[in-house]
Image (cartoon, rainbow, N blue to C red; front, side):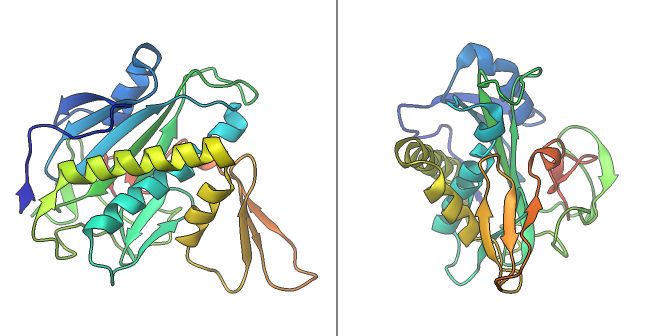
Length: 261
């Protein structure tokens, strides 16, 4: 059962923009980011997903600033952790998906103004997030809030076998507004930590939710690439590029506008 409230209780650094269902929080935040500025939080009132986007003001060139995807994902996972049973793990799938008890439940995405070069400090960034709360009774075939139809399938870039939802995972009451509020507060904490002490802490918290592959050491490069090094003095470091994967979120079905099932 969903618990609905009219507004949000947000820290004063945020300015709330509320949209009706069928809207797109991420696209709307990108369209108003230059005018409204940092701290603008766009929330789409829907029952089937938690959908939100936040405008950020980076202080680094785009090549480094896109690491904000990790801060946003950490905030999203932290918010979910507050409201979920402690025995069910929340993990990440490279580079942008959120897994709940091994099932895909949503993820994050990031965007910036068109024409921004790698060495430019972006005028703004937008982090968008989505968590599935309910699955349509239609099953794997459904109609998205954007008015498109399609059949959900496993994302080729993902590592999940199937999708899930908060309802499916046993949440009797789903307070979407409370999830958004928790996300906003945790995002503020992670952004401030990055600004005050550098990116290391944010990166370590993201890596802590990334399932281990064998016994490798992991790290995040200054440009956001994932660094993997298997155990052993002669092992060769593997570098997985972040930037090319951000154009199309791995967790998002482009036909339905929803997380893959």
